[in-house]
Image 1 (cartoon, rainbow, N blue to C red):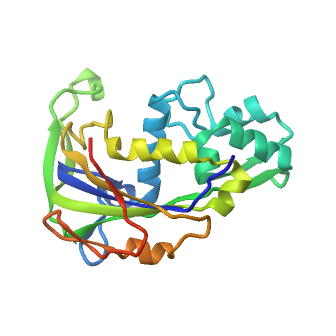
Image 2: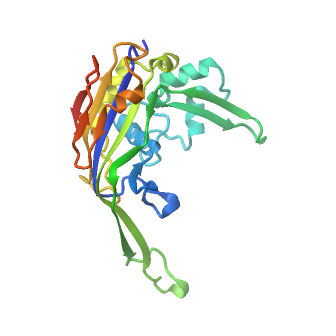
Image 3: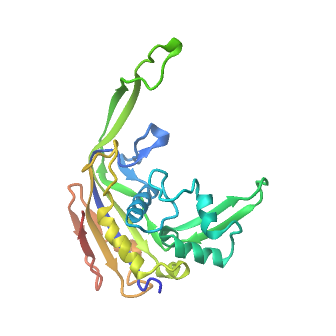
Length: 273
């Protein structure tokens, strides 16, 4: 049974003294827009959703190397272990969606080369019903950069002498409220088998998005979910467009918000974990 109704959601986050999503092309500084707003990519957010799902014992295809629960060394080996080496067609799509939660939720492109011929291979696109937008801060953020040193040598220098201290930089957002939106499309859910139960699973995950996510760049307690807004429409096509639903919530720089009430569509508001 696939998703029976359209669903929209929004999430309000708070970050203090942390780097929520570093930009590898900019010295791992926190991502920002040209206007100075903080940014978290949709890929970063979906990575956290996948990690929380994996911790709850749910099969995930795109597993990060430090959290993987199988012996597969790549996405290709993980796909071939389940789908076989000859992938393609509706049977491959059906089996992939049945096996992995993130495939039937977010979709996936299975594109792998076969043999020595670079022109030969397989490409199986799966379009998922769950879309997640990038997160942005309500107001421009202030970034603090700190120079750090590693006083313990990682390796010996020339002639067996201790190598000099290693210099580096560490960056953080002082504080800021981020928000992002998402939607679940019943028409696309019919093709992947994404169900009401799957939607409920994501609903329970969102308030706990940063549980077990601490690192040097994101110390424990530096990032938290404030609120989750969850709209369930009364039909598959939805009472309103996602754009209108998302725009019905206006977030402010102090973490408060203004809500424009939509007729017959009131969000369920969940408190962060």
